[in-house]
Image (cartoon, rainbow, N blue to C red; front, top):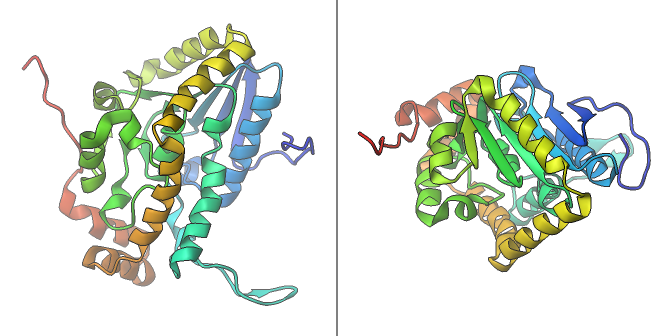
Length: 302
């Protein structure tokens, strides 16, 4: 893989990069951590996406996850560790996320630069979603041009119950204001099948048919010349910009930083649990009152 300046890099540690029939498949590859996002993975992902956008033998990109999940969100153990103050060349402080409002905004904006590169690419990106697509995983998926999910995929942002608001916000543009509020105000998850019914994803397939469905869609798209694909993607994205989508990403990051300063009981309890008992206990106490935490749509034929 090379970066956007043409400098060759070492083999990626946290993702796989494959090209076949003018389709690049970029696979998040931390299956033992359910593909939880950290800075090295996001950096590698950004560089891989930029390389796929640059290469002339690639027309379409598929983003997916190895193992049981697409992406279970950000690595909260790392997110809550903070940053050290002592370095090899001297003692000085770096910004610490969630300690001061502006520092948190800064940290979120730097992460957004990695995670939100997808809309700026000229080539279309399909998210192939299976298993968990939660929290930061939805930041990635909803930034893609199309989302195809397994019927039993689990999509949502449970962190909105105690941790903040999504720092990347495409929810309203996919499902409208009511469903966006319904999902964010409860942190409930929704299956891939029901997500397709409300427009959160484009379509869903039985899990065993997902690979074939995405492969065929990517193949058909890759038959179209790069210049035409770019024109189609960019005119739609310009329409989204006219609807405020770019500005909303900046505001979403700032509102997430504001939410991090909450001293409400649920936010306070989560931080205390993380400090004293670790992630597992913090998640148990955060999500326990919500039961299984799923939206269930009524069958219109019932």
